[in-house]
Length: 181
Picture 1 (spheres, rainbow, N blue to C red):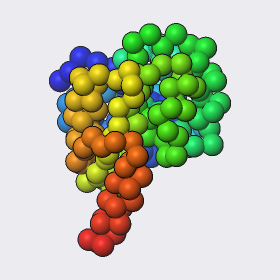
Picture 2: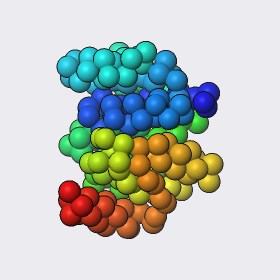
Picture 3: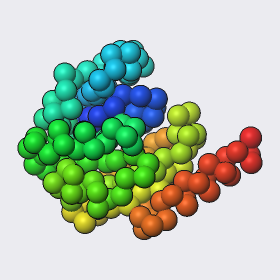
Picture 4: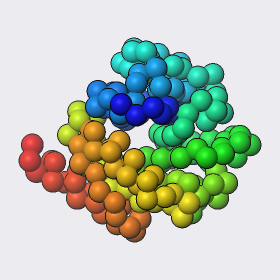
């Protein structure tokens, strides 16, 4: 088990599924997981489904508490989240975005860091049978890519692709899973 902490900004279904997968795969201890969601119901459900995890009081508290921060908010919320986090001292935090339609350039500019990995997981990740493509931001290292590969591999398969192919990979894997069902 790695000695790291993982934070989630957004505690909805995908964030919960990822956290549960990471803990089940023993990549992180449950007490090393922290999340914030402005909707109390989502935060409560996250805490129930990831026993031992922590619920933070704010997005900035997540960044302060975690080595890796997963951005798991709806696309229409990311601009507000980035404005808030741009004020935080992100230091060496690795950000992983699972937000559809928000490219690395926008994330880097909004968060004022280039240590970002964009991941497009598909719906079957919710049951540990997913596929995810991921692309590294300019400031993300090869070790960051390996970490993301291990994390996402714990809930299915994961592979690094150029960012221009992320939507196609996700669309193909969604379509393939539909055809298999």
